[in-house]
Length: 617
Image (cartoon, rainbow, N blue to C red; front, side, top):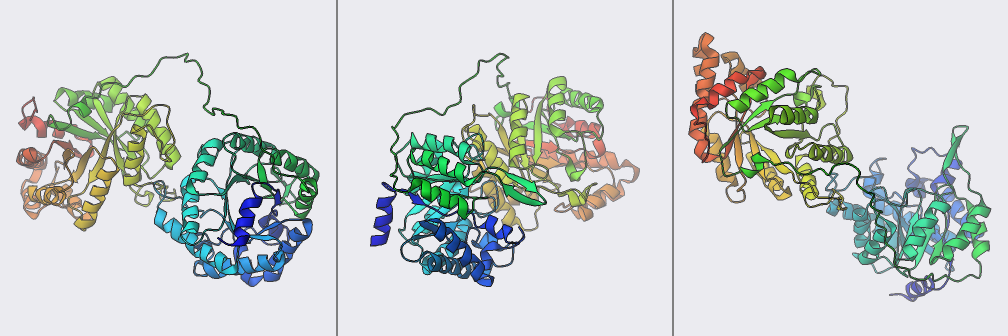
């Protein structure tokens, strides 16, 4: 560790260091559009950047942050500069050093990736760390003294940034997260939780920046100060912005900032500066106010940030009995799919569910707007069938239309309504449905959704935060033994099981050989119950359509020829083929998943008539 590093680490425990203010706000005020890649200006407008740094030096800032908030590869890719991450970062550090000289510290500024990380998003932790690593390498080459990680809302992401720094150096790390007006991060982490986590990850100074003004941030800092005596950093916005003449104007005055700075340092803050909306005038006021001051050391008070429990005035919701889950793997179970109506009248479908139950069906599948066509809410339909037909339901939940927040909300609502069996599916893209002008969400896929439900069963949400109570969902996933790239399908199936899948439903199959091949490929890792999809064919035309026009569906030529010869007796032939297939595969699976075409539910009843009413196995 260098002498300069040791000096800085000693000073944050005793002295007050003034950091600079906003860079992006100043560039915006200088006439640059919000669409400009501010980081690239280190190369194309270096004089502009260095001039701003010098203004903060003149104002009294002792720490000058590099203009590299978004110089990671993922964020630069939005502007086509991803290959220049290291070069832009190095240039940013050199410009800051040129302005700061050797008497002040240069902080390598690292902001968020502007991407959602796994398990919610598709950016892996390894990809995140790699994206930070090029930026960090450039900043080190430019000669920074310390790293400022700022404006983070995810503990997972800020951990990867810290680890990426530690992979390359031992320089001090100031780690700040952004908090909302209710004193928590966007995800819901409390200040004490953030402080403990960042300290554990290896941060030398912990703090808050951006998002709120001094008053709201004061409460965050006070809670941090009562949790640990680690040095703190506070860099609030200049209040909330107001749009004046088409431009954003921040209203908190330099004098107000100076008064707030004195309160911050009384709560253990050793680095104080500004974020969005702050100017050299704000920093000058802070520098003058804290000159000669020493870091305060507030009494360590053990506090609880647990929300007070309100008395329960209504009924406690118990978990209803789930016979489908109780019988998984113990009894051969029969499921039939019912698509929600394209109207607001569920009556006919509830009557069909009652008839299916009377015929020996164990479970009703309720699809979630299949083929991306607008239908009644699948959850509403599942609840009504369960309530009015008295039969267990399996709710298909698609990732197409909802982000992670909405999916969790839907799941909690389903649990309250007693809909406890979930089939996690990615969903059909809207391009194939009735509303091609609509937009897909697909923030999660079926694997991540299964993982999220599994987390909820363990009493955690997708971010790892505690739920008030764990859920008790049965988690199902889809499997496609007819996939053209079977290796990829097998790998995804393995990942679904690792994510928490408890059972699987296959695509419609028409020959046992396809099932046997799939079972052989997954036998080494899968022991979850498998329900084989069966779709009784109605006619030769129906068979040809399924075989030729539906992706990943295969109807053997022998069956297509048999349907062709059936003539006007297509329904009868289709039922007989499905019955033969059912009897052939019954010993190889734990249940079947019937998909009667065009709501012809009598065909489903006819198919299962070859089974004894007691399907125990």
